[in-house]
Image (cartoon, rainbow, N blue to C red; front, top):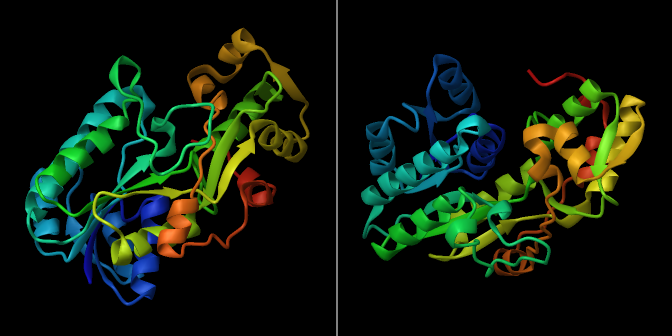
Length: 301
């Protein structure tokens, strides 16, 4: 298949590109810069110039593809709501090209849009109404596009997608611990983060492309819930700083804007995903992966 991939040079998307090419697919990757274009060509992919704001570039890419994988998302949390609405427009734009074609569209959501505190499955739906997570716009757009006859599937990524090149949640915690001189957790630290290695996630994207069911939700989750205290312990040991419990008020001061993520308790299962697609994660688990020097080699910019 010829597959149009957005976010093709990102942390997850670049792994998806390699997974697809290694499996014999052709890849057309969206590139917003000359540097991104060079990376794609070096990987063996073709290049579609454009970005998420350039809807025409998305239409062109989708029009010439046998399937589309949308992994791109702007993670600037200072304008998170705006970025979620951009994601909605992107999905609607891609879907408009694929209506009635039976060509698959795979979009990326997050386990974090689901209700907290109990085990979420693929059938669990995002919180609705005033308490809805902004990123639920992704799944709302997927439902809208599906109603128009698009063969769309949703992959929900675990909060921690880890591996070489990670610049998301765990590196942010490492950065905070360096700055504050302590590695903190909230309460008893028993709140749970699902996790998946980026290479296992990339393999799932390919399986959904090849075998996914229209309208289905799939969970890129290798570990249902890693206690936050265990993550804090690794960071403390690697940085040689104390590991300290914080109450809610102290946590807000310590973690700042990251506090809701540090407090997140959202265990999630991928049993249905594994059974339906034969997806069985094989790469290192979160604690083993982050307990390595490369996670602590550089501070975040």
